[in-house]
Amino acid sequence: MSMNPLELMVRKFEMYANLTADDRKALLNLPTTLRSMPPSAYIVREGEPVSQHYVLAAGYAFRHKMTGDGKRQIVSMHIPGEAIACSTLFLAISDHNAQTLTHAEVAVVPRDALRALALERAAIGHAILMITLVEASILSEWLLNTGQRPAIARVAHLLCEFAARLDAVGQGGRNGYELPLSQEQLGDAVGLTSVHVNRMLKSLKGDGLIEQNARKVRFPDWKALRKAADFSELYLHLEQVKGG
Amino acid sequence: MSMNPLELMVRKFEMYANLTADDRKALLNLPTTLRSMPPSAYIVREGEPVSQHYVLAAGYAFRHKMTGDGKRQIVSMHIPGEAIACSTLFLAISDHNAQTLTHAEVAVVPRDALRALALERAAIGHAILMITLVEASILSEWLLNTGQRPAIARVAHLLCEFAARLDAVGQGGRNGYELPLSQEQLGDAVGLTSVHVNRMLKSLKGDGLIEQNARKVRFPDWKALRKAADFSELYLHLEQVKGG
DNA sequence: CGTTTAATTGAAAGCAGTCAAACTATGTGG
DNA sequence: CCACATAGTTTGACTGCTTTCAATTAAACG
Image (cartoon, rainbow over all chains, first blue to last red):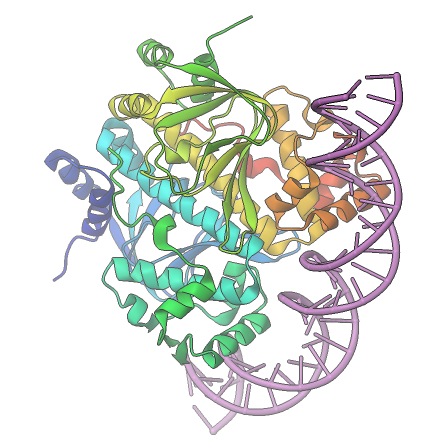
């Protein structure tokens, strides 16, 4: 079925707030265009003003920041159905880059129009706040991950998070999935070099915690992987999130 | 002057949204108690439901998470005047711990009352969203810091951030300040051991980038320190943040 | 197919961690 | 005011995890 790409955004909002029929209608009436983008295409650049809001209709994306000497840290991953940077909705200039990971279909909405709705309609504003809170919670866990866990757990943790998030939207998940990240990107997400990520993946395979051919990963022993990763899905706040 | 401790919260909100006189009055009429807490006292524990909102009237606090094997990552620092965990206002259970750093005066507000105001009054909800966005931006920078920068820069970066944030509220700042963190806590904030933090501080002193006696730090060459830290205050969003 | 990009492996170097001890504050009670 | 206990800082020696460098193999792509 070819549906309005904004349906995805509305569905997400409804997970986090009780929208009225009016709220829903207002959101669906926002002007929007669907943009098809190749892998690795820039969506937003650090330091630039942002005038659009982007929702992933299909494909994956990520946000990242760079140090003065050119090292890159991925600060978030976005799966189909998610907005790419709620955080820039209300900040004048972007403090990070956003890029597609795979080929992607991106719904583009004028930022000011959505912003106006968020300020007028409490439920919409609240949904955006909730999404931001969950993103911040994930960010804290990533900080814990890169700051305190050994390399093997860091890599395993990211694989687990991906599985749990994909599971939550009925896309593969802990039964295995197509990993959209290269080993270098994986490394940039957890603060390791691609070489070392490769070694950690090899070690996880050797221990029977993951199986992998090409980009497809499977989890023959989810419990053991979860343990090795020190993973608990609480921080994803997958349920009970309406907060009102 | 002995003022209502909620004044601090209102002042903060006003930096981020245009409150009406009514909004202001509603906030100041919230029931509140002032609690005096010793250093290192727990305010919130991971996994527990949170029923209060906490604002630092005086003193410092921090939030942290722990790995399964007991390693601690500090995920945020809070200076006088700041709320301690806007993030838990709308999430059912806390996914992190919050603790005082120094002796502190904490204004305690019933969470449900503030939550109700946030949902009823657009400007208040918006202020909370903005504060959350800025906190998330800081979290991204911390992730970049621990994930990609060498130890010396990590430590320097935290010192710079502290200076900039204190500056913004007219408290010492880049002229020097009383560092409220032990070296161990400093390490837990940037993903290093206390031993290595000690060595990095020594090195910064040796290079004339900082001066330190007891807990008092000074910055004889702010520009050079800033450069060594790869620090830019953009991510703090200290101005132009009303977003409307 | 040839070209480019990503994955894999080995060897060596280095940054940060660990362990252990000494030293310095800070605070408490006698 | 001193003696002691406790917490935090400083230093050294050593270990080890992760990076770096470099080369090879495999996969993806036009």
